[in-house]
Amino acid sequence: MTWLKLLITNRLSRRAAQLIVKPFKIKLGATMSASEKEDFAHSIKTFGLLESDFTTKEVDLSDTSSIAFVLKGTIEITYVPTGATKTYETGHFSSWPAKFHDDLKAGFYTKAGR
Image (cartoon, rainbow, N blue to C red; front, side, top):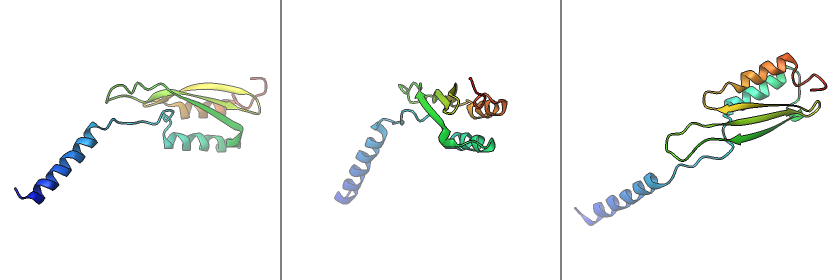
């Protein structure tokens, strides 16, 4: 093996080892996908409400101690004008955007006194 081939092989091996050993990182509080955020915004607009009137608090409950894990958590949604608040389960296999839409349709957030 020539010195150039040895050098290239050695560098590639070190880089591959770095990539393999480097731990997988996940951003905490990131259990809501982009499509769920779009569904959330669309539902609000569908009922003629303003997205700025809602606050959200997301909690990541994922167990990231193993390589294979499922994202899970909760999202607390508050409609500021009425103070109505509800918590939904988020993450893989959740249907919280549909449940949120149904709650908007039923008037949960917009009815005074909730």
